[in-house]
Length: 200
Image 1 (spheres, rainbow, N blue to C red):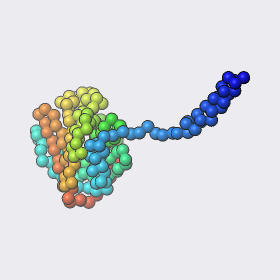
Image 2 (cartoon, rainbow, N blue to C red):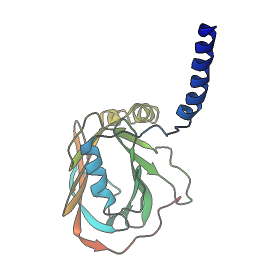
Image 3 (tube, rainbow, N blue to C red):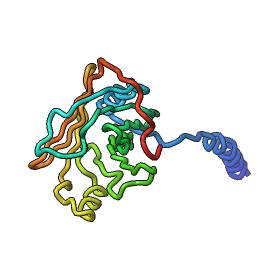
Image 4 (cartoon, rainbow, N blue to C red):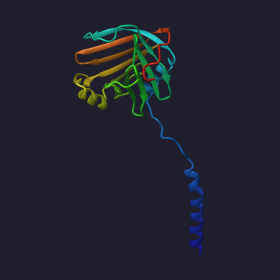
């Protein structure tokens, strides 16, 4: 009799506590490391502002970067930054930096004037380490490697993109064997807001 009574009391106790434990509902956390957070937050502080830049390294010389160069930190959330890169009247390029939970991703959204996507779009890379609060590197990811190979740009498979953010300057850099491109933007002199990028 005592054994059955103890079993009944124990079962009632379980029934009363289990539903309380089940009430705790939380989204899975988007984890990050301090250097990624500091880098992301510095860029986010520029949200809503635009800055003019200039190409400082282009080796070998490439076409398509003639005209006024403007970066615009246009749209920001806690997990993503959208930064259109305007070249004269060409509003086809948007850099997208995203917190992924495994680091930071950099993507290049390329559009046509009608807003449709270019064949070579959303390529980019992902951080492989903590980087620094002022510098992050993005080696080409697998999607990009396969895209470049399919479109006949195999030389781009080894691309590494780098972004530098300091109080007075922002730099975008591309490097691979035999190729370096870098554009610097002066953060001390905000410029007028450019048009909406194509497709946005």
